Length: 389
Image (cartoon, rainbow, N blue to C red; front, side, top):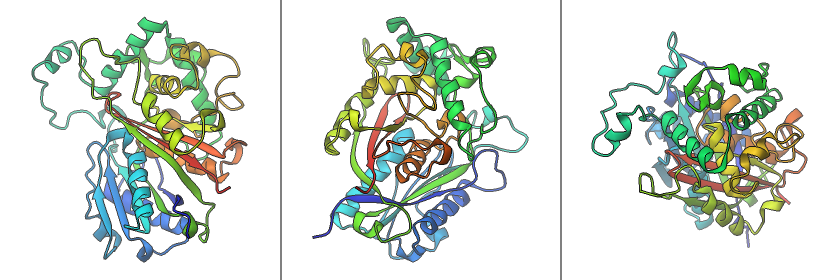
């Protein structure tokens, strides 16, 4: 009887960052082709396609035609914001386990950056309608963008637990240090000091410039198939051992835990249980880090540090960054590497699980935890990946 375990067999990534002249769909098509080549399969071997695009990029299921794929057994478009990438892997894994499809391409791409335009303009405007009803109350106070909403969440954590901006700065500095070891990182070759962090301008207090993720053009794709098939292909198989989702749905409810707890608190333990493993066995974690605060909150909710003690832990010497006790976001994350929604942590997770991280490779990579966060702490997905042993 064949092993029903699903596995990631291919990984494709386009150029990242200020790459112009291509649409999101073109980036997506290139990423899928690169993933197929990485796995050592032909495009005709793909019998499933799951597509997701950025905030403005609607790639659509007709990407099938751009790729020349025919007679697909699985075809869908998904949207779970930053939790989408891990969700796509989960659905592909279930499809492989059930026999619905055997070789599924998963892709996410975006192209928000335009030449001669500031990065800050990438996700602004676009005919956004003015908030109505209760949402108009926060909007009238200037709280109407993801950054201002996350800043509000961070403020609540600060008020409750005493978390400081300096502690968030240690996360930004640590991830920039990891990015120095990642040749594809947008900030590779550009170190960051804590003083530079504090000197950077405020975007929305308490967030400085370096508390906020990058904006990137590009695409990332993976190929999910059976472990049995993956073993016969070009790359070391990365087993998909466990997964879970958690979507609190309590945003705006009076006396809720906004800013104090995320869906990671539920989806993390559930995914670890499915993988028949524990947090102690996780050697490296790839955490969704649209903001430094998001990384801190997720690390607390997964249990890497106790609830409310994440801030002091991040500032403790030898705790994070290369050589630190907690190995997370080893490629630089969305803060310093590139921003491809949940595909950023997924990409680095596959690299680490394969043992292909070069200078940044973590020795203990048998179990890799991957998080995806969407909305304003509204949606969460978790993956547990493993090596083939």
